[in-house]
Image (tube, rainbow, N blue to C red):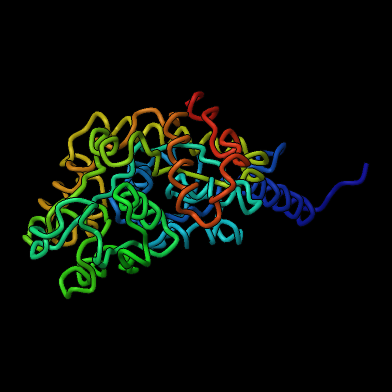
Length: 344
Protein backbone atom coordinates (compact mmCIF):
# COMPACT_ATOMS: atom_id res chain seq x y z
CA UNK A 1 0.00 0.00 0.00
CA UNK A 2 1.30 3.42 -0.96
CA UNK A 3 1.40 5.84 2.00
CA UNK A 4 0.27 9.42 1.36
CA UNK A 5 2.54 12.23 2.52
CA UNK A 6 1.33 14.71 5.15
CA UNK A 7 1.13 17.38 2.43
CA UNK A 8 -1.19 15.22 0.35
CA UNK A 9 -3.36 14.47 3.37
CA UNK A 10 -3.60 18.16 4.21
CA UNK A 11 -4.48 19.04 0.63
CA UNK A 12 -7.20 16.38 0.54
CA UNK A 13 -8.63 17.61 3.83
CA UNK A 14 -8.60 21.22 2.65
CA UNK A 15 -10.34 20.24 -0.57
CA UNK A 16 -13.03 18.34 1.35
CA UNK A 17 -13.61 21.28 3.64
CA UNK A 18 -13.82 23.64 0.68
CA UNK A 19 -16.38 21.44 -1.06
CA UNK A 20 -18.41 21.17 2.14
CA UNK A 21 -18.35 24.93 2.54
CA UNK A 22 -19.59 25.36 -1.02
CA UNK A 23 -22.43 22.95 -0.34
CA UNK A 24 -23.31 24.81 2.85
CA UNK A 25 -23.43 28.22 1.17
CA UNK A 26 -24.96 27.23 -2.14
CA UNK A 27 -26.89 23.97 -1.98
CA UNK A 28 -28.39 21.25 0.12
CA UNK A 29 -26.54 18.61 -1.90
CA UNK A 30 -29.70 17.57 -3.74
CA UNK A 31 -31.68 20.47 -5.14
CA UNK A 32 -29.25 23.40 -5.22
CA UNK A 33 -30.84 25.32 -2.37
CA UNK A 34 -29.13 28.61 -1.54
CA UNK A 35 -28.51 29.74 2.02
CA UNK A 36 -27.01 33.11 1.06
CA UNK A 37 -29.51 35.31 -0.74
CA UNK A 38 -30.47 38.91 -1.37
CA UNK A 39 -33.97 40.31 -0.92
CA UNK A 40 -35.03 43.74 -2.13
CA UNK A 41 -37.49 45.67 0.03
CA UNK A 42 -39.66 48.39 -1.50
CA UNK A 43 -38.69 50.88 1.21
CA UNK A 44 -37.06 49.11 4.11
CA UNK A 45 -37.96 51.84 6.62
CA UNK A 46 -41.67 51.78 5.73
CA UNK A 47 -43.77 50.23 8.47
CA UNK A 48 -45.79 48.28 5.88
CA UNK A 49 -42.61 46.28 5.20
CA UNK A 50 -41.47 46.11 8.82
CA UNK A 51 -41.52 42.26 9.05
CA UNK A 52 -38.52 41.99 6.71
CA UNK A 53 -36.10 43.96 8.88
CA UNK A 54 -37.69 42.73 12.10
CA UNK A 55 -37.05 39.12 11.05
CA UNK A 56 -33.38 39.96 10.60
CA UNK A 57 -33.26 41.82 13.93
CA UNK A 58 -34.85 38.93 15.79
CA UNK A 59 -32.35 36.51 14.29
CA UNK A 60 -35.03 34.35 12.67
CA UNK A 61 -33.26 34.17 9.29
CA UNK A 62 -30.09 32.91 10.97
CA UNK A 63 -32.17 30.52 13.07
CA UNK A 64 -33.21 28.90 9.77
CA UNK A 65 -29.61 28.74 8.59
CA UNK A 66 -30.02 31.60 6.13
CA UNK A 67 -27.83 34.61 5.50
CA UNK A 68 -30.13 37.26 4.03
CA UNK A 69 -28.91 40.57 2.63
CA UNK A 70 -31.77 43.09 2.73
CA UNK A 71 -31.46 45.85 0.14
CA UNK A 72 -33.94 48.67 -0.46
CA UNK A 73 -35.67 50.56 -3.25
CA UNK A 74 -38.18 53.28 -2.43
CA UNK A 75 -40.60 52.18 -5.16
CA UNK A 76 -41.94 48.67 -5.62
CA UNK A 77 -41.75 48.95 -9.40
CA UNK A 78 -37.96 49.37 -9.11
CA UNK A 79 -37.72 46.41 -6.74
CA UNK A 80 -39.55 44.16 -9.19
CA UNK A 81 -37.11 45.20 -11.92
CA UNK A 82 -34.23 44.03 -9.71
CA UNK A 83 -35.93 40.65 -9.33
CA UNK A 84 -36.57 40.22 -13.05
CA UNK A 85 -32.96 41.17 -13.78
CA UNK A 86 -31.78 38.45 -11.38
CA UNK A 87 -30.03 40.90 -9.08
CA UNK A 88 -32.01 39.60 -6.10
CA UNK A 89 -33.77 36.33 -5.22
CA UNK A 90 -36.89 37.87 -3.70
CA UNK A 91 -38.80 41.10 -3.13
CA UNK A 92 -40.78 42.30 -0.15
CA UNK A 93 -43.34 44.47 -1.89
CA UNK A 94 -46.94 44.66 -3.04
CA UNK A 95 -48.56 41.45 -4.25
CA UNK A 96 -50.13 43.21 -7.24
CA UNK A 97 -46.79 43.09 -9.08
CA UNK A 98 -47.24 39.33 -9.52
CA UNK A 99 -50.46 39.94 -11.47
CA UNK A 100 -49.10 42.86 -13.45
CA UNK A 101 -46.03 40.92 -14.57
CA UNK A 102 -47.96 37.77 -15.49
CA UNK A 103 -49.60 39.68 -18.34
CA UNK A 104 -46.08 40.39 -19.65
CA UNK A 105 -45.15 36.73 -19.65
CA UNK A 106 -43.30 36.80 -16.32
CA UNK A 107 -44.20 34.38 -13.54
CA UNK A 108 -43.87 35.77 -10.02
CA UNK A 109 -45.36 34.20 -6.92
CA UNK A 110 -46.17 35.48 -3.45
CA UNK A 111 -44.87 32.85 -1.03
CA UNK A 112 -45.66 34.69 2.22
CA UNK A 113 -48.52 37.19 2.37
CA UNK A 114 -47.61 39.61 5.14
CA UNK A 115 -50.77 41.70 5.01
CA UNK A 116 -54.28 41.49 3.58
CA UNK A 117 -54.68 45.27 3.34
CA UNK A 118 -52.43 47.99 1.83
CA UNK A 119 -51.49 49.97 4.94
CA UNK A 120 -51.65 53.05 2.70
CA UNK A 121 -53.13 56.39 3.72
CA UNK A 122 -54.38 59.24 1.57
CA UNK A 123 -53.09 62.35 3.31
CA UNK A 124 -54.20 65.88 2.44
CA UNK A 125 -52.26 69.06 3.19
CA UNK A 126 -53.84 70.69 6.23
CA UNK A 127 -54.29 73.93 4.30
CA UNK A 128 -56.38 72.06 1.71
CA UNK A 129 -58.30 69.84 4.15
CA UNK A 130 -61.47 71.95 3.93
CA UNK A 131 -61.42 71.69 0.14
CA UNK A 132 -60.48 68.03 -0.26
CA UNK A 133 -62.79 65.91 1.91
CA UNK A 134 -63.10 62.77 -0.23
CA UNK A 135 -61.92 61.30 -3.51
CA UNK A 136 -64.73 63.23 -5.18
CA UNK A 137 -62.67 66.36 -4.51
CA UNK A 138 -59.62 65.06 -6.41
CA UNK A 139 -60.80 66.97 -9.48
CA UNK A 140 -58.27 69.60 -10.47
CA UNK A 141 -55.81 68.46 -7.81
CA UNK A 142 -52.20 67.29 -7.85
CA UNK A 143 -51.97 63.92 -6.13
CA UNK A 144 -48.75 62.34 -4.93
CA UNK A 145 -47.91 58.71 -5.62
CA UNK A 146 -44.72 56.78 -4.92
CA UNK A 147 -44.00 56.48 -8.63
CA UNK A 148 -45.98 56.34 -11.85
CA UNK A 149 -46.89 52.72 -12.51
CA UNK A 150 -46.61 51.90 -8.80
CA UNK A 151 -49.23 50.32 -6.56
CA UNK A 152 -50.10 53.74 -5.12
CA UNK A 153 -50.69 54.96 -8.68
CA UNK A 154 -53.26 52.24 -9.38
CA UNK A 155 -54.95 52.66 -6.00
CA UNK A 156 -55.21 56.43 -6.43
CA UNK A 157 -56.81 56.00 -9.85
CA UNK A 158 -59.26 53.46 -8.44
CA UNK A 159 -60.35 55.79 -5.63
CA UNK A 160 -60.89 58.62 -8.10
CA UNK A 161 -62.76 56.42 -10.59
CA UNK A 162 -65.44 55.73 -8.02
CA UNK A 163 -66.42 59.37 -8.52
CA UNK A 164 -66.05 59.35 -12.29
CA UNK A 165 -62.63 61.01 -12.34
CA UNK A 166 -59.73 60.09 -14.61
CA UNK A 167 -56.01 60.67 -14.20
CA UNK A 168 -54.51 63.11 -16.66
CA UNK A 169 -57.79 64.81 -17.47
CA UNK A 170 -59.47 65.40 -14.11
CA UNK A 171 -56.40 65.34 -11.85
CA UNK A 172 -52.63 65.08 -12.08
CA UNK A 173 -50.50 62.37 -10.51
CA UNK A 174 -47.08 63.45 -9.29
CA UNK A 175 -44.13 61.20 -8.43
CA UNK A 176 -43.55 62.14 -4.78
CA UNK A 177 -41.57 59.16 -3.52
CA UNK A 178 -41.75 58.44 0.20
CA UNK A 179 -40.44 59.80 3.47
CA UNK A 180 -38.75 63.19 3.27
CA UNK A 181 -39.44 63.65 -0.45
CA UNK A 182 -43.16 63.11 0.07
CA UNK A 183 -43.20 65.48 3.06
CA UNK A 184 -41.38 68.15 1.05
CA UNK A 185 -43.81 67.75 -1.87
CA UNK A 186 -46.78 68.31 0.43
CA UNK A 187 -45.12 71.23 2.23
CA UNK A 188 -44.10 73.18 -0.85
CA UNK A 189 -47.38 72.68 -2.68
CA UNK A 190 -46.14 70.30 -5.38
CA UNK A 191 -49.03 68.07 -4.33
CA UNK A 192 -52.34 68.83 -2.61
CA UNK A 193 -52.72 65.32 -1.25
CA UNK A 194 -51.09 61.96 -1.75
CA UNK A 195 -50.84 58.30 -0.82
CA UNK A 196 -48.14 57.25 1.61
CA UNK A 197 -47.44 55.05 4.62
CA UNK A 198 -46.08 55.22 8.15
CA UNK A 199 -43.83 56.59 9.52
CA UNK A 200 -44.47 59.42 7.00
CA UNK A 201 -48.14 59.57 7.99
CA UNK A 202 -47.29 59.90 11.67
CA UNK A 203 -44.77 62.62 10.91
CA UNK A 204 -47.25 64.68 8.88
CA UNK A 205 -50.19 64.35 11.26
CA UNK A 206 -48.15 64.93 14.44
CA UNK A 207 -46.68 68.16 13.05
CA UNK A 208 -50.04 69.35 11.80
CA UNK A 209 -48.85 69.47 8.19
CA UNK A 210 -51.26 66.83 6.97
CA UNK A 211 -54.57 65.19 7.76
CA UNK A 212 -55.79 61.66 7.08
CA UNK A 213 -58.35 61.57 4.28
CA UNK A 214 -58.68 57.82 3.73
CA UNK A 215 -57.13 55.19 5.97
CA UNK A 216 -56.29 51.76 4.57
CA UNK A 217 -54.32 50.63 7.61
CA UNK A 218 -57.39 48.79 8.90
CA UNK A 219 -59.68 46.15 7.41
CA UNK A 220 -62.68 48.46 7.87
CA UNK A 221 -60.98 51.40 6.17
CA UNK A 222 -59.76 49.23 3.31
CA UNK A 223 -63.17 47.73 2.65
CA UNK A 224 -64.73 51.19 2.72
CA UNK A 225 -62.22 52.54 0.22
CA UNK A 226 -61.67 49.52 -2.04
CA UNK A 227 -64.77 47.39 -1.59
CA UNK A 228 -62.93 44.46 -0.05
CA UNK A 229 -59.58 43.17 1.12
CA UNK A 230 -56.53 44.19 -0.90
CA UNK A 231 -53.55 41.92 -0.11
CA UNK A 232 -50.42 44.00 -0.36
CA UNK A 233 -47.13 43.49 1.51
CA UNK A 234 -45.69 40.11 0.62
CA UNK A 235 -42.53 38.19 -0.14
CA UNK A 236 -42.65 37.31 -3.81
CA UNK A 237 -40.13 35.46 -5.97
CA UNK A 238 -39.91 34.15 -9.52
CA UNK A 239 -41.77 30.90 -10.07
CA UNK A 240 -38.57 29.30 -11.39
CA UNK A 241 -36.72 30.14 -8.19
CA UNK A 242 -39.54 28.82 -6.00
CA UNK A 243 -39.60 25.54 -7.93
CA UNK A 244 -35.84 25.10 -7.82
CA UNK A 245 -35.25 26.18 -4.22
CA UNK A 246 -38.21 24.90 -2.23
CA UNK A 247 -36.07 24.25 0.84
CA UNK A 248 -34.87 27.86 1.12
CA UNK A 249 -38.37 29.20 0.42
CA UNK A 250 -39.67 27.04 3.25
CA UNK A 251 -37.01 28.45 5.57
CA UNK A 252 -37.91 32.01 4.58
CA UNK A 253 -41.59 31.23 5.24
CA UNK A 254 -40.75 29.74 8.63
CA UNK A 255 -38.81 32.86 9.62
CA UNK A 256 -41.36 35.38 8.37
CA UNK A 257 -44.39 33.59 9.85
CA UNK A 258 -42.61 33.46 13.21
CA UNK A 259 -42.12 37.23 12.90
CA UNK A 260 -45.78 37.78 12.07
CA UNK A 261 -46.69 35.93 15.25
CA UNK A 262 -44.25 38.14 17.17
CA UNK A 263 -45.89 41.27 15.74
CA UNK A 264 -49.34 40.01 16.69
CA UNK A 265 -48.33 39.21 20.27
CA UNK A 266 -46.17 42.21 21.16
CA UNK A 267 -46.84 45.90 21.65
CA UNK A 268 -45.68 48.61 19.27
CA UNK A 269 -43.13 49.73 21.86
CA UNK A 270 -41.72 46.20 22.14
CA UNK A 271 -41.48 45.94 18.37
CA UNK A 272 -39.81 49.35 18.05
CA UNK A 273 -37.26 48.29 20.64
CA UNK A 274 -36.13 45.48 18.33
CA UNK A 275 -35.74 47.70 15.27
CA UNK A 276 -32.57 49.68 14.36
CA UNK A 277 -32.40 52.95 16.29
CA UNK A 278 -32.07 55.04 13.12
CA UNK A 279 -35.45 53.81 11.87
CA UNK A 280 -37.02 56.06 14.52
CA UNK A 281 -35.47 59.13 12.88
CA UNK A 282 -34.57 60.63 16.23
CA UNK A 283 -38.14 60.47 17.54
CA UNK A 284 -38.81 57.11 19.14
CA UNK A 285 -42.26 58.06 20.47
CA UNK A 286 -43.36 59.01 16.97
CA UNK A 287 -41.98 55.74 15.59
CA UNK A 288 -43.88 53.75 18.22
CA UNK A 289 -47.04 55.62 17.22
CA UNK A 290 -46.41 54.81 13.55
CA UNK A 291 -46.04 51.10 14.33
CA UNK A 292 -49.08 51.12 16.61
CA UNK A 293 -51.24 52.78 13.94
CA UNK A 294 -50.17 50.27 11.30
CA UNK A 295 -49.40 46.93 13.00
CA UNK A 296 -52.97 45.63 12.81
CA UNK A 297 -52.57 45.34 9.04
CA UNK A 298 -50.27 42.31 9.39
CA UNK A 299 -51.89 38.90 9.37
CA UNK A 300 -50.75 36.19 11.76
CA UNK A 301 -50.20 33.24 9.42
CA UNK A 302 -48.87 34.53 6.10
CA UNK A 303 -51.78 33.12 4.09
CA UNK A 304 -53.39 34.74 1.07
CA UNK A 305 -57.17 35.30 1.15
CA UNK A 306 -58.49 34.15 -2.23
CA UNK A 307 -61.19 36.83 -2.36
CA UNK A 308 -58.55 39.47 -1.68
CA UNK A 309 -56.43 38.32 -4.61
CA UNK A 310 -59.51 38.54 -6.84
CA UNK A 311 -60.15 42.10 -5.65
CA UNK A 312 -56.59 43.12 -6.55
CA UNK A 313 -57.12 41.75 -10.05
CA UNK A 314 -60.33 43.76 -10.35
CA UNK A 315 -58.55 47.00 -9.49
CA UNK A 316 -55.57 46.33 -11.76
CA UNK A 317 -57.76 45.33 -14.70
CA UNK A 318 -59.09 48.88 -14.70
CA UNK A 319 -55.91 50.89 -14.22
CA UNK A 320 -52.79 48.88 -14.97
CA UNK A 321 -51.82 49.36 -18.64
CA UNK A 322 -50.52 45.80 -18.62
CA UNK A 323 -53.67 44.22 -17.20
CA UNK A 324 -56.37 46.22 -18.99
CA UNK A 325 -58.30 43.95 -21.34
CA UNK A 326 -56.45 40.88 -20.07
CA UNK A 327 -58.30 40.11 -16.84
CA UNK A 328 -59.69 36.82 -18.15
CA UNK A 329 -56.22 35.63 -19.13
CA UNK A 330 -54.75 35.98 -15.64
CA UNK A 331 -54.37 32.77 -13.65
CA UNK A 332 -54.44 33.91 -10.03
CA UNK A 333 -53.46 30.46 -8.78
CA UNK A 334 -50.00 31.03 -10.26
CA UNK A 335 -49.51 34.38 -8.51
CA UNK A 336 -49.41 33.02 -4.97
CA UNK A 337 -49.03 29.84 -2.97
CA UNK A 338 -49.84 28.95 0.63
CA UNK A 339 -48.00 25.62 0.69
CA UNK A 340 -44.96 27.01 2.48
CA UNK A 341 -46.80 28.95 5.17
CA UNK A 342 -49.14 25.99 5.67
CA UNK A 343 -46.07 24.00 6.79
CA UNK A 344 -44.63 26.75 8.99
